[in-house]
Amino acid sequence: MKLIMENWRSFLKEADTARAPWDQTAPAKLGAIKPMDPRDVKTPGTRRPPGTTKEVPQVEPSGEVQEHNVEALFRLYRGDRRVFSIFMQGYEGPKSIDDPTVAEQFINYLVVKNKIFHHNKIVDHLGAGSFGFVVKLDNDHALKIYIGSFDPIRLRTDPTGRSDIERYEREASKAFDEKTGAAGDLHIYEQGELETPFDKKWFYAEMQQLRTLSNFMREFAHPNKDAREVTDGVNDEITFLKELAHLAHLVDKHGAQAIAEFDPEEAYAKQHGRAFPEDYEDEIKFDPDFGLSFETSQGDTQLAEFAKLLEQGDLDAVLPQKIDLLDKTYAKNLFNQLKELLKTKTLRDITDVRGANIGVSEQDESLPIIFDY
Image (tube, rainbow, N blue to C red):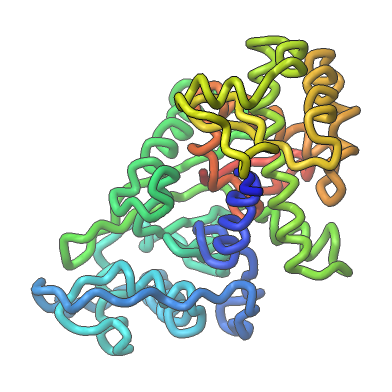
């Protein structure tokens, strides 16, 4: 049996340890980085051959803030394998950045040439992933430093960072120009490109400080459970909520009765011009652009039941059947945010919405804030 959900879950489990920038385990203080948790380790990919760009110019930081931030970034480069991987991927100078001397020169340049490092000190490390890392500033904001965005179509890095940049511009405009931002929106105070001594672009975004859902669930909500099981279970529940939000749109469009009477074999044959393959006999496909699958012991019967309950507006009757780890109020709020996202996005577009990319508000623990997808 080949279910779409299984592919999603396999993808999520492989990626959750070191993908998007707000990964799970953060040292308490920059001065004393803890040994890496095995679940957060990702071996850096093969480094590109040295480029042909000029040597990194020799610059020296000036003032207490610049000197502090150079030291903080260098400690992260030396002490966190994920941050080291980001530097390896994002550097294209003629010498290897795994040489600490070269790394120090590059970090000096990064700090001196970019004003975002001139006013506030880096005081903590909030997490890292395949595309970037996040630090806490002494103004209680988070600073995300990244070398690209997740491409949900190709399932790889987009080095232009386009999707993140466009989203951060929208969020900043809503909050500060249009004054239409909601409590669950991401507040972006500043964003832009980082000047580097070579053509490859780095990016930054300064935003409100958040705890990742993955970290919150492991350390606060379920501290006595196996951490890996909590992470995987939370991601499974988020996947269910995404599919449920998609189903809710289908119910709004077609009605619950149409869902109950849906014939997957007939729909597949109509869409593809060939018979429904036996390997996919349990897959329920609604959306010709992507699809929807519910992996349940009750099969179609429960799908029809969920559709009916959604049509009646009785989400509270659905959630207890599938949501065990997440707080029910938090899950309901997340469902509503996902449904809103799916007005303009497809399920594939929000593949990267998972525990490591959703925040728990510092002011209201029942309020999810999706900061990457």
